[in-house]
Structure formats: C-alpha cells, structure tokens
Length: 241
Image (tube, rainbow, N blue to C red; front, side):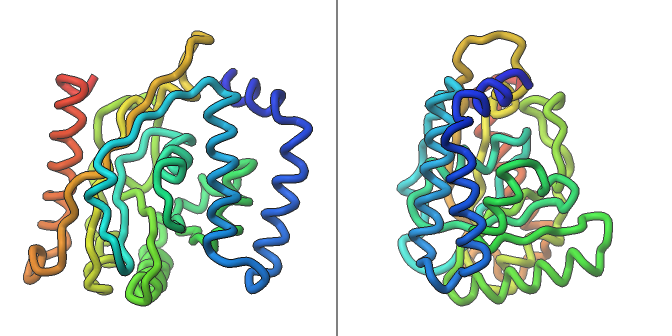
C-alpha cells in the first residue's frame, strides 16, 4: 500500500480542492453537466497515474458502442480498477460498487460526484433494487461499471472469482449492450513491494448486444462474459499469472 500513501503525499496540496469540488458536484448535481463531473474525475485518475508512477495501456476502445447506454463488466482486482477504466473511457460513466468497499478516501467522493450506486451484495433484495435502478438509467442512455465478482481480493492476482449472474439484469432489462472488460495486472498498483512503475492493462472487449443474448438466462450471459475476460487475461498472461 506504499504507493497509495506516496501518491497522497505528492498531492497533499491538490487533494483538498479536488475533494471540495466533488462535494459540490454531489450536493448541487444540476449545476454541472455529466461531462463536467466526469472530466474532473478523469483528471484525478490521470493525476493518480502520473504521480503514482502507474502506466496503464488501453485497447479495444473501438468496440465501445457509439450511442446509447451500456454496461461495462470488468473483472475486479483492487482499488485501482475503476480509476483505470475511467482514465481510458472518454464518455461519462457511473459506477456501482459493493457498499463496504465504497467509503475509502476519494472512492466515496467519486461515487457521489458521478451519481454512482452503493450496493449491499450480501442483501439480495437491496442488490436487486439497485440493479433495477441502474437498468432504468441505462435504458435512458447512462453508462455504468458493474463488477460481476462483487468484491475483490488483490491476492488473487489475474485469476477470476465466480460472477454473480443477477448483476447482468442491469443490462438485459435495459436491452443494452454488455461490454466485457479485462483488467490485467491491476492488482500490482497497490500490492507491489517495489518502487518500480506499475504497468497495467485495460482491454475493452467485443460487446454482447441484445440480439445476441435474447432468450438467454443471466447465467448463460454471465458465462459468456466471464469466458471472454478469461481468454483475454490468458492471452496476455498465460495461465492467468
């Protein structure tokens, strides 16, 4: 975790102002456009990369749907995951996170500024209510990040946990594209014992469109998305290591 502390120290003069702006964005959402709020968060993500010596490469941006709402479903390796996606994705996104993981410094402010969702993944009824809220917003054109593994443990590295099929209802009920996202080596950012630059990868994979998943169960959809992410990780890191 030394990199997180190092990044915070290097940005001690900037952070209070950035956090204050996000508080205003959360408290007065109508005074800022979605793009203005998102651009501010992207600047923070870029600053974290620069001052934390994090080098993240992105591929597959051409796969992102040009119009309408969609849901990104990435694997989950650690605290840096959402930042890496936001830094690479130009159009406004929001994010749904496990409630227990959502109150870390900066993470909480970013969720509030972007109008994100805190989901209690241990409470099925609450999780379903949040999924339905997201589906309604996606149907109106919003874009969301949802981590189908639910939580994370940075010790699992590039391996995958079981996906939670129910989370795919956020896309299927909105009849929206499902975009698998493969994160490679993201765990290294805050789990590396060396001061060397951390190198990570974000791969936006070919979407699964409504016509392709029509008639499928969410379990079937989940299996397809997981298989695509697994294949990309193994392509980049043989045996998922």
